[in-house]
Image 1 (cartoon, rainbow, N blue to C red):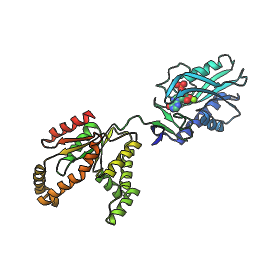
Image 2 (image 1 turned 90 degrees about the vertical axis):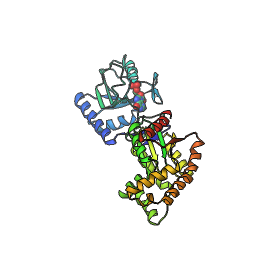
Image 3 (image 1 turned 180 degrees about the vertical axis):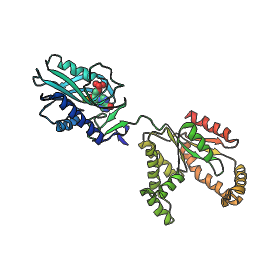
Image 4 (image 1 turned 60 degrees about the horizontal axis):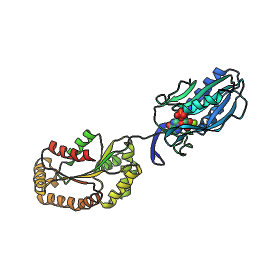
Length: 369
Ligand code: IMP
Ligand code: MG
């Protein structure tokens, strides 16, 4: 993903696909025009890259010139098209091929046709590298189209978003889905966090990022970050937050189209909570809520002892250990409760009751976000 000004863009059309499309157009046009020497006219600014690549591929003699029109503000096509540099040569009797980077609504094309109305050219042909059929509102024939694309804003290969992106050799498409609902899920041992995370994931189409799973995945697959994390663990040291954050960043990027995330097992400290805020900010997003399942200590102790009878987990069998884990949980999360409360993002949810009843309570919180 790349960021230009305030927007994110994801890779969409590779340099190779663009190159192939331009080659095809050059061949088709050369075949159709026979021995005629055409005048290729690029519409500035956007078309400079297409024109440059196109004429290098054009196998026969040709002339090249430009006119400069301006019609765009930011992401939106504007009605007011200005002619900044018009025609500077006589084109009477010539075959003119307009070379466009992109045809969107067709307003620019309408202006082009207006310009050529009185020029007495032999023929006016329109060639465009990109074409958005869903956006096109005119009837002018498009003689040569490189690649048809959906009606979404793109940048790169001459196309810009508010001045930026023209220099990129491939094409990126705007990322429209924002990460809308990002939750940090908390719960003491035995509160049923894992079970509830599964339900929320399904119900809200969220991506569940369990830090433990992310660590295991990276270490097992020996990713660069996994290997780095392992080097600390092997020395008996804590993995620095920086490394963990990078792994989480990679997870978030992997799911660029996700509606939102459930973070589980992270953050554990104030510094981590800040780091997570910063990470989400780089994605134009933020943490909406910390939701903590609240369960009375005595209930937890009973639940865990019950689980210990069948799970075989040593730390579920000893009451003193259980109480210790619960105390530790509250010591750790108290800080985070303060952190998120300060931003009005802390939500405690009663974790006693049936699984369904608790899911309903969690949903009630999420629906208000
Ligand atoms: P039209 O006049 O609406 O057909 O738009 C044509 C002009 O708008 C192009 O020459 C571009 O400058 C600009 N444009 C249209 N769509 C995009 C896009 O997705 N990204 C960047 N510029 C675009
Ligand atoms: Mg243009």
